[in-house]
Image (cartoon, rainbow, N blue to C red; front, side, top):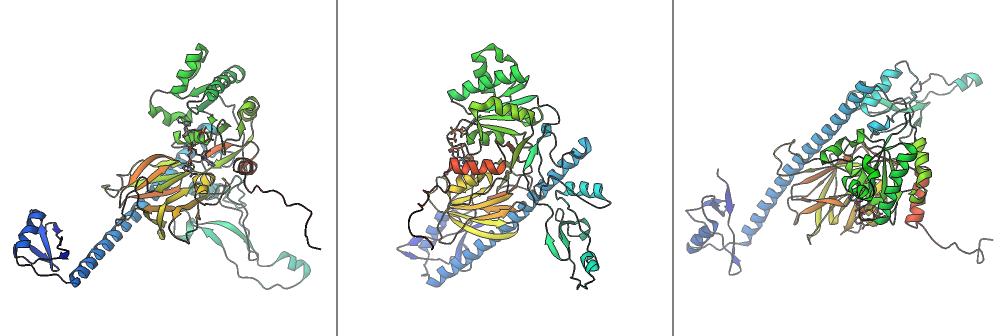
Length: 537
Ligand SMILES: NC(=O)c1ccc[n+]([C@@H]2O[C@H](COP(=O)([O-])OP(=O)(O)OC[C@H]3O[C@@H](n4cnc5c(N)ncnc54)[C@H](O)[C@@H]3O)[C@@H](O)[C@H]2O)c1
Ligand SMILES: Nc1ncnc2c1ncn2[C@@H]1O[C@H](COP(=O)(O)OP(=O)(O)OP(=O)(O)O)[C@@H](O)[C@H]1O
């Protein structure tokens, strides 16, 4: 049957639905076939004897429309679920392929997960451990397998038939039922591929390892190349950059990379800077991670975000100097740059592995699974908001295959824990230590009395869909940049990225975080209550 259009029009404040021999009729409604002009068809019909419609027709019509809308929504959901699954499998495949390649070329990194800086730092997004203890004969095999599957195995304690202390004391102890807790590998359903991650002894559950510890970076070979990234249009930054380049070359024999704009600025200043390297085409940025040992940023948090955005894969360790106003992620003071760089170049130093989110926009109009846009990595957050539209955003949200909620308000923020102190904080989200692996789900001005922000574990895939019955379009922006319009039917899929941003700490992850929230945000600042006054006797 050829496609057709429904005709309806208010006439003298009444709706007339016309039965006409020259027009196809379906469910009592007049249908204009595609080869007819609907306007013309309507006028033709108007001149035929009209039959006054009853309210029943309207009810029937709206029910039919509702059924159609429901069916469309179901189809879109099924499609988006399939796309989400495909994206997730693609991500896992790429991760596994990258790790396999790494083993083949270099063997296992000797420091328990931190390969040398030339390859950047990869983190096991499911559960990263910096030490592994496996007391069983297949240690090597198990370790390799765990790394391959992104899950670390832990010491598995034998379930002993008799309690050694009871043998000593001669007491008889009732034997508790034994059990084993395990995590699946890459969604494997069969028990064969499962790894024990929680040890048990006499029925008491204990975790031998927790996912994140303070990580130290220790150079095994001397760093030789530094990339300096600077905030544009700042005189103080320009002056410091020139001074730092000179110092690094003369005192540390370091090779320097800068952005083309900065190279031009340096050359304008003196021909001494001829040795500084840069790039001509954006394509070359893809290979930067394999050329530089360290990235130095001179600016504020925006410059750290900018630096992270240049690396779509592995990121070399980043040393952020503060030349902005807030500097939440920039713990190093520019006045002390010599001492700081001395300390960093010598090592070891603490790093914070700042997790990133990988975002995929999936268009309703995409022809197939492969027809997706390039993924975008964010260090702070991806925001889906109403942009210039004056309507409420209407967003359907799913976590893996479970429905989470519909957001009706100004929008939604999916944030990393590093981003928890940025836009998400302003929208009422909790502040989370950057080393906690999780995804924050924070609504922006929800028009509901009971919408509290959520924090999801790091292994989930979130999907935010603009439903077909949304009144307006939505807009996605990535770390506050690069807006993309999302039409009804489009979806954004978001999961934890494989490549974190390793940032050098002044002291350590926790100390730096607490100092930032105290000094940067004046967290919980209150005058201390005086001692004199009523008190418990
Ligand atoms: N209402 C808001 O608070 C709001 C609105 C839009 C964007 N933002 C944030 O701005 C970020 C982009 O930063 P920009 O510098 O390019 O834009 P910008 O110049 O507009 O600066 C935004 C402010 O956010 C601060 N900031 C950025 N990342 C932070 C973090 N992780 N923790 C604490 N503070 C942080 C910056 O220091 C700066 O003061 C976005 O990722 C978003 O988080 C916040
Ligand atoms: N190398 C760069 N090239 C292009 N844009 C950059 C670069 N570095 C920073 N930016 C952009 O410049 C803007 C301001 O940078 P940044 O936030 O570092 O400085 P600031 O605003 O002075 O600091 P603060 O955010 O602490 O007040 C940001 O939006 C950032 O994305």
